Length: 433
Image 1 (cartoon, one colour):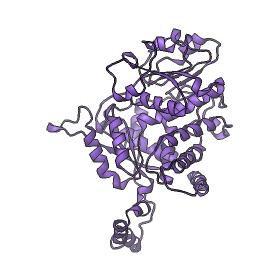
Image 2: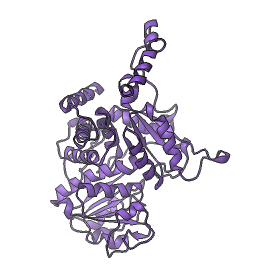
Image 3: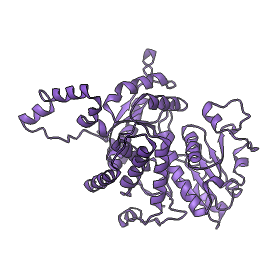
Image 4: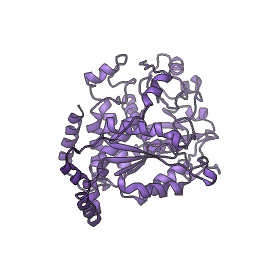
């Protein structure tokens, strides 16, 4: 395992003063620069945008700027701690946008501001929708973050239909895109077709529902979701609309029963809810994606003991084990590709394309500079390496281009010169050094 040790003091020192700031891409050193940047010159840009609104993408920072929006109702695994407490995470997201996708992101924390000044209580979807719609003219995309289910579903769906820029809730789709890439490579290694896999997902919140959506879009047919009451079955009367879409006719009632004979387990739920006996009962050469953080549904050491010398694939959400399902492999490049072709949405075709490109990249030889960052790991396509590493610089070109191409092909974006686009991504990568 490659463990990176940091102390509480290290973390707080790193965050002191914030993690983001404003960089000026144009000079402001002379009286002429001032005339161009502000009065009187700025009036010409104002008039141009008023007459031709689409020029806002050319004459402002909008074409490369994403709002990172949260009301703090579901921060990481910490729960509802409010908008103010969400800011370090939103700043962190902006850092990742810039460092990996060369996308400018800016935190937009939305206080709930209820009567009496309270900033607690459940999300008011309409208020979030109204706020985001009002600020959208400045941005080329909206990244929703750490908004609790079920409100997050309504907010994303309605904003996506309302706005002509991409709206993407990373807690719903980010994990789903990366997990789907892992599933595709598991199928390759196990020599199984996606349509033949038996899949069990534990956790029916935002991530679990969207993983189910992505798996089915990729070709999975046999899928059972479990929630805190057991398997999500069609005869249950307590299901919301999103769970009902994935309700099955399984005879299994519990998670343990559902796992018997399953090829794949995906956990986006709670620590230690799967036992060694459960994974022993799965099909030969199973895949276990235990992604609860910080403690997975079953620890890799428990799986290793239960399956002894038998082949299997293990993935977690942690950086100190192989096969980390890390959202940073997705959202910077999904937005990079969408922004570059001015896509109006990030649709299913674009998400599946990102998964396919991620899976394909993991099957390629890993550059020496990436291997040097992970000296304790064997980085070659195998059960211990089914997902690329975040510091693989090829992600910027390969994933972003796949997303952009899918956007154009699916009609989510206007026609574009894809050859020139790929060349521009290569140039952007070289400029980043």
